[in-house]
Length: 125
Image 1 (cartoon, rainbow, N blue to C red):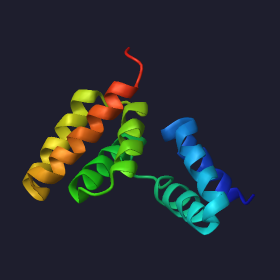
Image 2 (cartoon, rainbow, N blue to C red):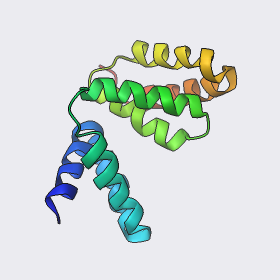
Image 3 (tube, rainbow, N blue to C red):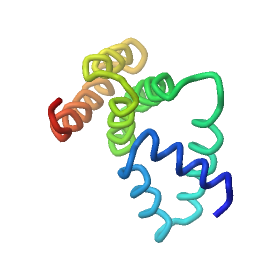
Image 4 (spheres, helix red, strand yellow):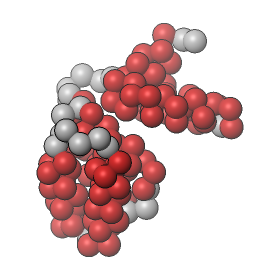
């Protein structure tokens, strides 16, 4: 494994824990190039850049995926990631509410439903 890929896996694990690594491992057997793009580019290049901390990057990811309105699996992963790197459930809701202005109510309602699933699936503090 290249150092670049190892760095991407390390960053992915830092944000998403075992769930993120399992996602990539699952892709490797079916679509290895996609697994490498996610690991190498998204996490090895973009998420590893200086300039934003992981909390800020996850806020951006939740906002972007919420605005898209059609990526529930990816949003689920990043809502979990946001919580893992220090966002509160209340902040995640506020991030999603902010997207109403730019993406409309349907996209935000879809995102709220995903966030609710994530919150309910996590152990209570």
